[in-house]
Length: 65
Image (cartoon, rainbow, N blue to C red):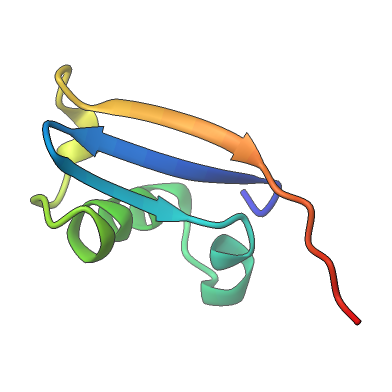
């Protein structure tokens, strides 16, 4: 949490949270994934448990001035 971003995909629905979302919101892993499903991918709570859902993780480099 806070190191990796997550992309979730089911059919045409996709959603992405950058790594800093976890640290800024204070969500635990379950809440983080649930909010990704609902807020970003437009899917139902718990969608990440569906075997037809694809989950990708990535690292991001944050640049500031």
